[in-house]
Length: 154
Image (cartoon, rainbow, N blue to C red):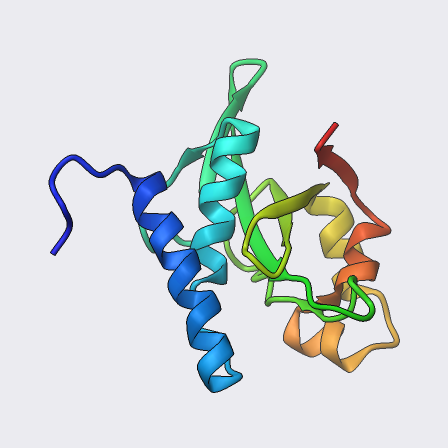
């Protein structure tokens, strides 16, 4: 049960601590990276979070009077090669205008945020040569960064 008067930021600070502790005890991540990434992106980029389980996008913002639908992905970086790993599945059948990738450190704090428009993401996912990209709609973090712009910190 939530403590009265606590806001989402305070609750998520506790979630981060629990996720770190859980990993230290079990060696396994707990499934909170996506939620934490959504909150970080909304705070840092001024996005309005969509209702839970909205098909295709996680947040919106208004640009030149037009609503832009933003799909948010999160990746916790680990030691060694920081940009290893994959961006989770991007469902091209669902509506979205842009994809944001929040890269977080081992304490689940945002260190970089990258953004790419849908057309570039779709072109990369459909480019021949990779089963993971073509069939699973997933690409490596470094591949995603190659078609994006760093939007935070600026």
